Image (tube, rainbow, N blue to C red; front, side, top):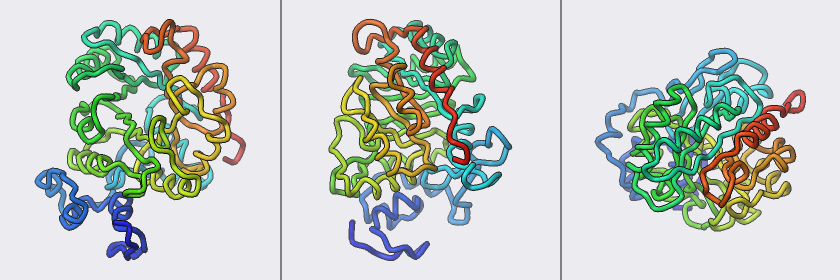
Length: 339
């Protein structure tokens, strides 16, 4: 799978597996046979060979130009300004559909099985105190219906809110089949790490992208890149794999070394350099009002739970004043002129 070969579509010389997942030839039966990817071919065949390789995803919040979604699931910014001023800002406006900030805060709500009122209350605290969105997660073994029951309750209370899901008990290819069509995002630890096989890409990723494409669904994929508790990416591989993450994922998502542990500034700079300045990059774990200012130059989206909770880890009890404090800090960032 790593033998270089010329792409019959674009002529680039690259490994066939990387070409498949990066260029998104998801209708090619030979690709599925070559890589033994078990995706519903009947669903995929509904898309004809003549169908455009791109389709509208959202509109730019600033100028209403269409933001396109490529077959492989990546998104490209509209061309409505100088290249230096496009990309990440337009993507953020498209992703969240809320007043544009240069940085976004998504509060992670640690939910409790069967307690929909708790999740609604915590999501309301997050939105009322400046959060741009919430991600719902259950930090114990559960089945998808457990989280979906909670999701529908929160969605009913916040019909226009940005609500994402993290099915911690499921791999991404299983989870993506469960996500409701009105849910904006799926966050998964699956993604790209330091393993040698398949350039570090988890086998479930191309399956998930194929399923998303077959469903013609706009869910945004927040997928792990150099994420905690995964095999570390060697320094010499970071740039190459970062470019791959930028192509595959709507929002590459990295973290500190463990839950509640902040990423170092040196590591943050290295991750940003790896994915490039035009990528929308998220960070999870260890972010708080005490260290957010230092991390703002490197990340576009902050996924935060522990630093906003009262009591024990995973308590699921948000402190409104801490949410407001962190939201104000995140939204106060002004990127350097010309960036």
